[in-house]
Image (cartoon, rainbow over all chains, first blue to last red):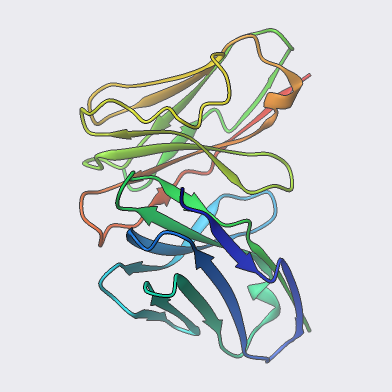
Length: 112
Length: 114
């Protein structure tokens, strides 16, 4: 059974810092991995999608990496801004079941 | 349409009533998922439809929950005899065929059982 874990559960940093959010998964038979952002009381916004054959994806100040063999993904946020404050969710698409399994999220606060 | 559409956006119902939640996926997306998110908690998988295959219902919490999808179009999630613990945001997502397609989520239906 696929399990997805995100560390840390919460993170508070001053504006301008670079930071890394971690995601680990137990079953390497993945279809793809997707990072989402969720603002309080809102839906999910897709940030980056990494296919199982890829190692990383970049969008603006965001970079996501994938290491299937070790069951890990990281989301790197450069030069953090207060507007980055949100909960970041890692989700793994299973190639065996087709399900998308979510981690519990990392709640990020960027202080001005 | 351009995105995944869910209706209603908010629903308040009395305990014991039945409710029906609707999801319109992105046109052409073969896969459709329902999730539940209770206040302050993570996303809980409920059910998954892939084309004309039998749905994966392994996440449905009880027999009060059911979902249908006609072909590759609209899906409805029905909760019978609602209980207060059913209060949550119900999110729907759809995905196209191929690993280069990500999952697109709707804005959700916030269900409150009073």
